[in-house]
Image (cartoon, rainbow, N blue to C red; front, side):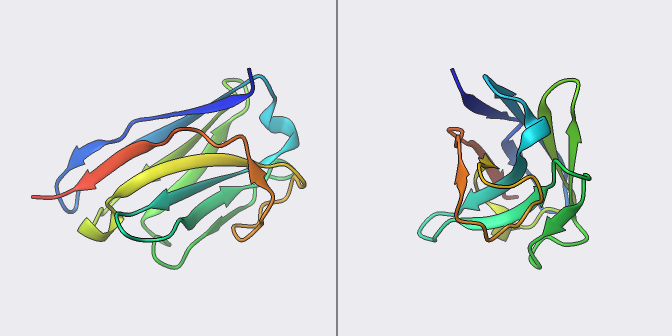
Length: 125
């Protein structure tokens, strides 16, 4: 079965850190750029970050730049999102997906698929 499984979410205080994992099964991340997205309560889905399969280059939304880091372990077929200096505005369900049309990442691509079910991150004191 082709799918992503996200994990690592939870409750964290403002200023804290979490590392999210996104494990792919049924397909190889060698061929697809992978993106992290989030949907906060009452808001539209937002692209957070992506990583290219071609050269490992990365991109970030302005809202997380300097605080979040995306990485990939090809041997484990897994993408990670290290989130530092978390803010209450980071509260959301976080999802990952593969760009089915390209190996070089574009956060704004409309070709993302193989969506996971997401993992909830809550930033609150």
